[in-house]
Length: 250
Image 1: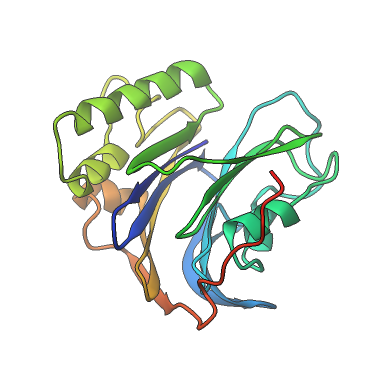
Image 2: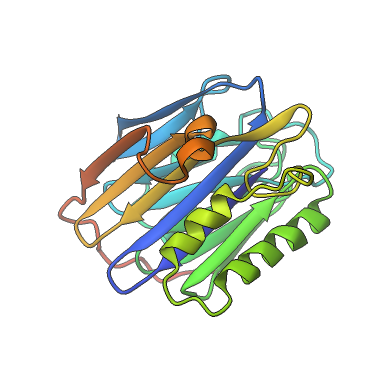
């Protein structure tokens, strides 16, 4: 259960993501981490140790949304996929390298984004498909364990209403991710249900030289919108950050 937007302009691309999960499930804010292939920034799921969003020093961002296909419970937490992606140099390299075995993970969508490409992995528990997404100035993806088609339609409608006739998208994106309605907050982007809710909002902003992650706990985002993050971390791109991706096979 999550909602994310991708906003691209001439100099930056920005991913903003609401994490929805059980109210009792704990998470820790972003920290700078070091893997075998370099540095990355990521919050963590305390229970399983994985993550739902991460960004590395080569400019690759990985985001995870749950799917709800009928499938056995995976042996490994889905959040592991995001951390595995952080060892890769680009979206297309990661998309080719991440090939789960049947039963390894519960179903998921994983979005892999860099300056050149956005690739979506769709895993139903047994098979994976890969799709290179056409570039758009603004895109939105969402998932929900409850009435998914209706929830997606409602959130798409909110985005369409907020962006109608608007040229400056920054404020619109902030408003969308913080949007709630007192009598209908089970479907809103900032959602609240009896046992689950939006736990946090994380934003990754990539320029030509650095990648920055900002993080708001739910209470902070509700109180002041997407201003004054609880945590801000940035890392410079390494020298080989923008090397060309290999010829794709999907």
